[in-house]
Image 1 (cartoon, rainbow, N blue to C red):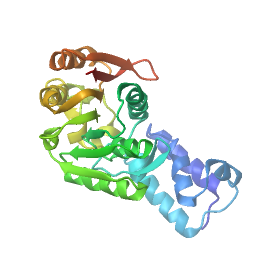
Image 2 (image 1 turned 30 degrees about the vertical axis):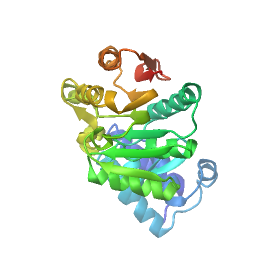
Image 3 (image 1 turned 45 degrees about the vertical axis):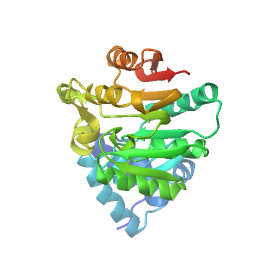
Image 4 (image 1 turned 90 degrees about the vertical axis):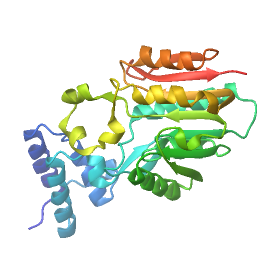
Length: 284
């Protein structure tokens, strides 16, 4: 028995809404199954799904009904205008991290006179930061670290697929970078306190990697480690940019102001007006 696209959409929509799950993911799933753009999908609602398409669609709807994020179901997410492969070894790239990159690129222009710069992405996950920085500024020499072998494999696949030449190192935070000097460091480390788990959605808790989500010391452990590790690794001038939890601005800025007394340390808000980034500019 065949069904039209709008029939499949409506039935899946209702099933997800009954469970208070994201019914908007049905559109992305249908685009994935059909290969259509959003506009073409809307224009094709009366078309019938093939038997193969229908079978794949309902198998993936079952995954959505189990709470699996749409990005893991279809295997990719869009970030900074590019498509990144994702699976449950890595966090799903989020728009706030695009803001981190955009600001870093702007500050890079004003802070540095030299052209060739050494850049490190600490805790790279899917490689979204490292790959984007390399493709947006090809002159950068880019290195990315992660403690997770599974995450590094995903990051390497993304770098290869998108044509970004990056060195990947396995290890805890900045430890693999020791012995060299760096001009720019960006990081989106684990920063959620374990006490906050009760406030998080089941979709995130059940499917995104806890290694990349949670940190000890009320979520501040990784920032403290970075504040300890980075001072001897940074050139002059240098730029450090960190994504933070929206309640961590004061605590993280104090850590980095202590680590870099001569630096300008700023808390930057995201597009939603929440504290989301720390930038540390170390001048000559």
